[in-house]
Length: 112
View 1 (spheres, rainbow, N blue to C red):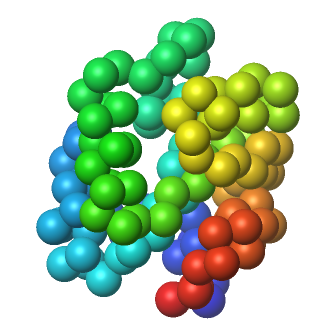
View 2 (cartoon, one colour):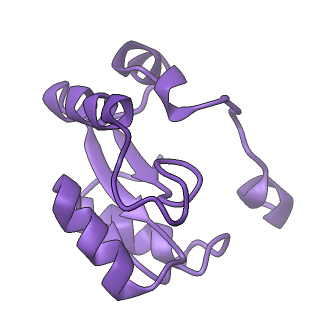
């Protein structure tokens, strides 16, 4: 797999809210690695918006495995992860794959 393929999005959406459980299942997914800043919340925002929290709760209830994957510092990201009850991989060095591999192992997920 070429480097360009690794760092090129395969699906673009305006918001994570566009990725409901049904759509994710149609895509053959059961695991999500979620960025924090500017994906789940604004950088300095201390907590999630209610609709993002409801989206996460819905995915968890539907059996999806979720992990935060962030280049952010351990203290800030782990504190946020604890607030929402999702495991996290900090200092992930994205777009390199090492953090993704750690998250997949943490969730005991299968790479596709």
